[in-house]
Image (tube, rainbow, N blue to C red; front, top):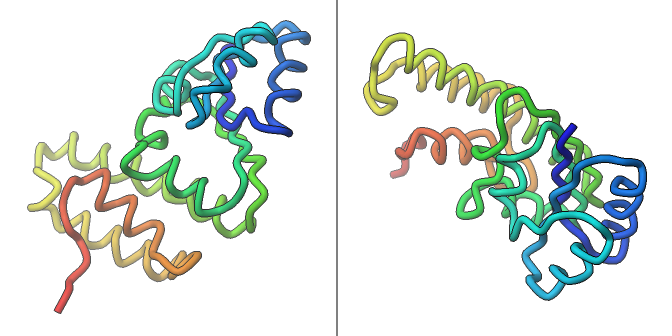
Length: 167
């Protein structure tokens, strides 16, 4: 099993090292490049700030300082969520509100649905009425989280278009 570990600070690095000692193939990363030597010293491979770590993982573990860092990592411009394989498991151990993580993982399901429908129908996202319906469901289901509409932001990122109507 390939484990991706993002966030190798004071708490994350010892956990990463424990996974390596337990025999797991671990690729770790962090936005702080200066942690590369410590990651390699504990026996893990260095994967940089995030997307490469997620793309190679069967299981992705995130351990970040808080919700803003988690949202920044998973959403654009880092785009870790879109790099994570559809069969991977994401375990978030970030010091944040459960609502933030719950909102992000539920959005993964919505994004998968959008992608599958668009591929099946061969319809560009911006022309699809299905995107609008999923957008409305996401708003009703998750609403604002942490001051921003996480599901909507993720839908917009995945689709590459603006879904919200702005006046």
